[in-house]
Amino acid sequence: MMGILNITPDSFFDGGNYSLVDNALLHAEKMLRDGADIIDIGAQSTRPNATLFTAQEEWKRLENVIPALTKKFPEAIFSIDTFYADVAQKAVDAGVHMINDVSGGTLDENMFATVAKLQVPYVLMHMRGTPKTMQSFTQYTDVTAEVLRELSKKMTELYRLGVNDIIVDPGFGFAKTVTQNFELLRNLPEFNVLEVPVLVGLSRKSMITKTLQITSKDALNGTTALQTMALQNGANILRVHDVAQAKEVVTLYQTMMIA
Image 1 (tube, rainbow, N blue to C red):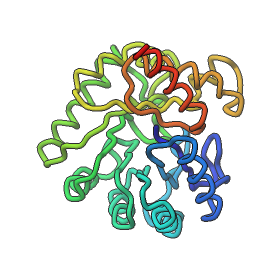
Image 2 (image 1 turned 60 degrees about the vertical axis):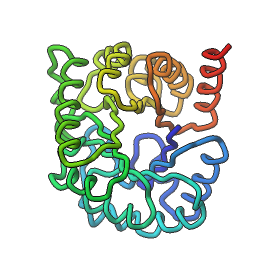
Image 3 (image 1 turned 90 degrees about the vertical axis):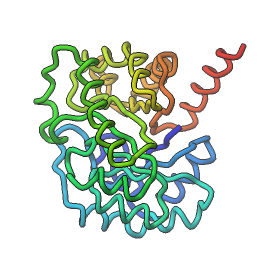
């Protein structure tokens, strides 16, 4: 279970709620208490059409929050949600344990080499273009096969550099249409061919809101439904806004599997 901690004013669901250090600490504490295994810290919105800012600006939002989190919760596992190698380096130096890169190494040519040097777990997500342009790159003949092929190619490069602890993320909502998102979810078992853990981020996303014609604030029930489907189809890690509710999904699923 990966709980989302957005240190940004403009994320699509909870932007602005946890920008202050004290608020971030309180939310991290709640997520850990609710059952989060990992806290994923991000300071830049990657919602569709988001305008990106620099690594320096991103780190400025993080430089006080990360040390406060790692000091208060020394036993917790923290992830940095960034596509900048410099931010990843500074975050790990400050006590973060893993890197979650939504760009899969495409937005910073130094990311793969930095991950190899740091030797920390790396979440390799599939995306085309940038958050601002990605929805113009949804042309696939076979979305599952092409996402698998593109992830596999990058995994080969990472292995060549000496990175061995890789987690893949199909990138729901990133350069995919709603229909393509559901196709990927249905075909999630095919990602077993990569022989690495699969992380799934479905929480309150547009594949729910557009299908049900609701807002992200009303999308918890839809999120729960899709997270259940993801677990049934082989997801190993859920990236979530609502940790307590997602923990219930996991508990019920695990109970069913051993009953």
